[in-house]
Image 1 (tube, rainbow, N blue to C red):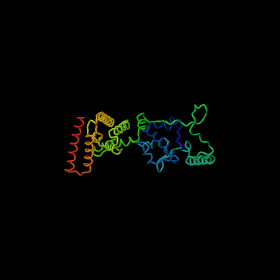
Image 2: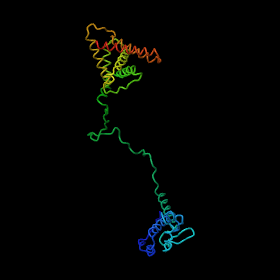
Image 3: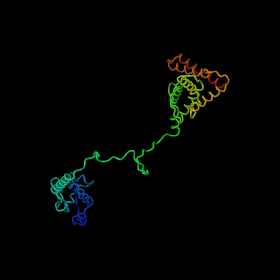
Image 4: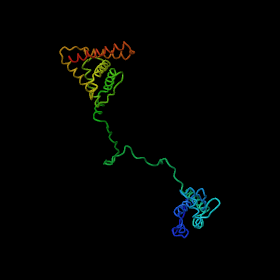
Length: 312
């Protein structure tokens, strides 16, 4: 790219010094410099139209141009103004175009002789891949050893994974029971150690009714969880499922300690099952008097259950 050249003795030239008698000295010098830059960028060989002059300085552009003509730095033309002795100090348009073409040809020749390698080339097949698994740097025998598997689970998660896989079904049944007292919505159970609590529930259920099937035991979990969720204290607990497991274990302990305890379902189980059936029926019933009656029956059973639990 060409650039406009200014002699280092420009400030002391007699034509520049002649501008000191004018009040537009600074404006004229600024106009001369900016006009030279514009002419070189457009390759006009020093020709500056009048409409361009008016855009290069903020005020008195034409008057400042006339001052440059007066001291001999510019000449007046039909279309505007022209620098005097432009070819003596600046390269002409013909020379700039010729130099550009020479430089472009030189670059093209160099690129033809030095082509760029293609990007994203595939690695040659003769390159030997590194061994896998990678050997340990500290291995004295130099043999390739597989890295030991890393267990990223927390201690609680590791303990949950080591328990009975049926605990996941117990956890789902517990959530189903919560949904019965929560308008059909299953609250999330994210308490750490939830599978440990589910394992305690599974063991306790086996002790309550030894001969019951697995499906019956899961239904007992749903019925008992529905009753537990109706209790505000249970919903506010920091670990509701652990509290639920502790209460179930306490109930099993009291039942096993009582002499001559019946092997069938207790009154608490009967009320819990009735509440679960009542809630399920209410969910299937359209809004109206019948649904309101089921709701009142549910609250009546809930009060009876609390009375039985208090007596126990």
